[in-house]
Length: 596
Image 1 (cartoon, rainbow, N blue to C red):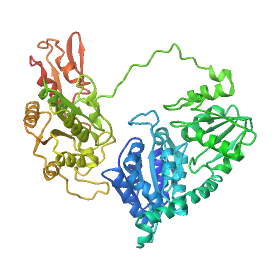
Image 2 (image 1 turned 30 degrees about the vertical axis):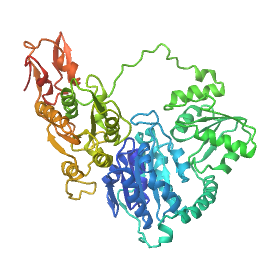
Image 3 (image 1 turned 180 degrees about the vertical axis):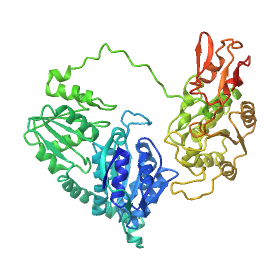
Image 4 (image 1 turned 90 degrees about the horizontal axis):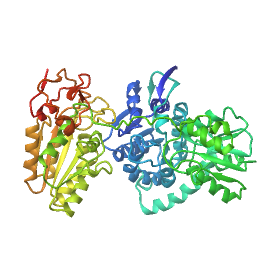
């Protein structure tokens, strides 16, 4: 055993390894990505790892392992749980034999997600238990405990960290190498493992009865705690508990209640913790889940208690909590005037805006610019997708008209085509996204005779979430030599009429490819293939001949590369950012930009 300084995701990984996990699958998505990557770093005899093509596939791979009596963990972010919901809802009814832990990392803010959805709601909807850690240390312990509860009650369970728990750091004591648990193997029994309406009906009744038992079990769980003795109390979950505890350490008489297992609700624990309490503030992020649970509990048991929180306007309805908001909100609830007014930021200047942008030299910028140039003067719809290339919406490119969810760009372009035959419908998707959820959209386009251009921005990695491999990279997480799955051959096999592969940094060829595809009826595809600049470094730099530069700003106004700026009316290139892609030189009307 030794101390390891790890982030929260690393703590979850160590917890799973300490529990003897046999299989870990998942799909990369911030804030959860580092869990599988940490498992891969430690010696893990007998543990199989994979980046799956999407969350649904990951869930189903893990389910088979759990059916075999093995311990399985599947990781994703909160919107990934939507993709995996089909198998998860059925798994709740079928159950498991080995422990199965579903890590769904929520993203209050949201910081890097489409939504602020609350996985606690999903757990209640699926009727499966959820663990809600408030720190990396708790995440480590809960990851181990979750396997025990899963096996005890033969159900998948959810571990729900949030961004600040995932990315915080702590010292965790764990072994230096790990060995997977021995397991029986799959025992065939179609009456148990094949889901039919009759089985679902019987198991639904069993689930509702079992969840009452789990709630009682959770009432003695060590991460459900209460301290202090007052008529006014604060209840908190997840990282919000850490913020509340930080403030209330100076007010030890105030009762502070922590709920580490929001569902099934630990009713007996809460009824005891609420004795003598007349008014309670629910300090939580995302939805008013605990607040609504307490209102139900108060009604069920006729408690004379006032419940305050998001529904009463005492806690913000959206966004993250932090130590300052804890001081302000809890201070106001407790009428602690010095806490509420100790920091006055009313005259503080606003921080400068820092919108996210494509990296300097990113080939996606060239891809977008080529399509924009080819479509100049034409009516066109540009449907984006989830990934680095979502940033193509930023000015001056302004090339993403829609972005809904992963894979939607390809199918939404079809909808626009069917509604407006006069416009050119174009979708943008990344190579990883193509494999995750784009292929079915292309099948749909061909099958339903859409007229559109599919642009695959292939930089040979899953860039936005940390450069994880995917089926097109020729490697997997187990370092097994695998065949690259060809995007071009896949498109042709589906029935796409024309597939052109081009280097987006070759501007003329790229523009010509777009024009050529626009002239062909049916589904066409352009693969803009160029490696991610974060992985492939170049010593080449671009330089401006200030004597030639006329200060027209065309390069800045048209592509918005962060390596370009203006000084003294002339263009300046930051050599620390420039990757030498040369796109700016192709735009300069007087040839003042060249490579060095």
